[in-house]
Length: 496
Image 1 (cartoon, rainbow, N blue to C red):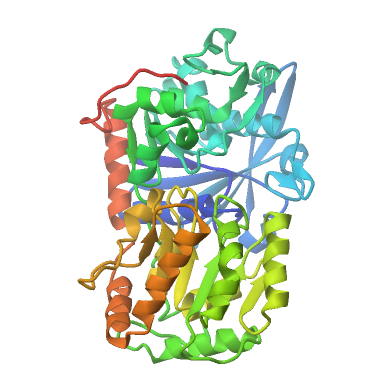
Image 2 (image 1 turned 45 degrees about the vertical axis):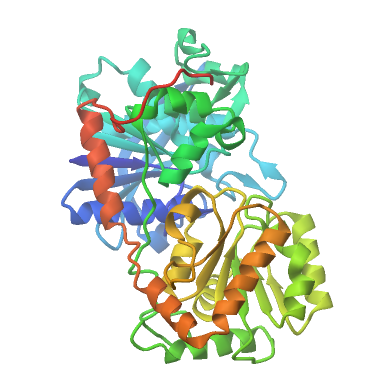
């Protein structure tokens, strides 16, 4: 199969979140299955040609936008695994700092930037003569691609055998713009109706992908259910998803097992594995020493690597730090985000200098040190489409403490009296519920035999992309046959 991944970010070229990790890892797994996989991205200013050996193809793309035609050029590189990556270069749209915005907020022309990118993806396919069987689109920035294929190019022989898959990585980010933005798309105004592209008298790129793609996916089974369940979880698009239940599947994200491997992690001060755990004690000691915390081998060490915002539940932690410190725990938090939450956590560090550390720089080595050195990994998210942190933590022998939601519910099984499970789970988004779960975890930690069994259980788990990649292949094949992706689901009337 010929598969084109269209996305706005991908490791190692550009990243703001988990989407980049998926685009960096899933194509590698599909390539192992002998599919012809390629990736297409915007050429941001931060993607340096010399660093990634970008080459000019000599091809250009011409995109009509309103009364203008925007011109870009195509550049190409290859990943370490030999996957071709194409870049749409347009200095006016992408030759600036930041992917989606600056410190003062989102770029005001993000609608123009990604209208251009979506149309340029299709023009680029023709320019490089790559006829994909599947264009796999990711998040709102690529949401117009399915609409263009259904409305602008249905009679185009070049795409006659092309299906589109649209993956929702986080339904909270919808690409909503004023109604006047629609004029720039070139799509017929007859498509601007409630059942299609109109969204509360505005225009949503995310809804476009949901409506026109041949198949829809999201990043965990539970999140697929949650996003159809209520306005709170579906953010106003739950009706659209319910109307396409048969075409909508939740496929759990995998983990790049080569990148995240404590036996070969170049950032760790000492490697370790399931069969040789001594190095993990050294990693804990190194983490404490590097952050100037007291070296306390038996003190439960809690780690958190996340955006500092309400979605990630960072505010819940601020409420219970005094109790945790009183109970003899150490806490390390790495993240950037909400200034108020950051200030609250900074006050915790000032109040408890021997027990609490906050770091707000972009620090990849420290993230690895936290995974390799903390005893417990906190993910108290109010919602979490999939989550990567809990998978990495288990791979590194750090026991996750999570809210029962989305992908966290699918990957972390409560550790019970029978000594089975993979972590500690709470069910209400309150500081008190989080505290109870942490105390349960600390109790197991203080029982060495149970703790050892739990660490071995989680480190034996396999969260590789192998099964998930095959699930995507199945979705691609069904989409090409235009059959239901989720045959057992019952269709519901759209309200979106």
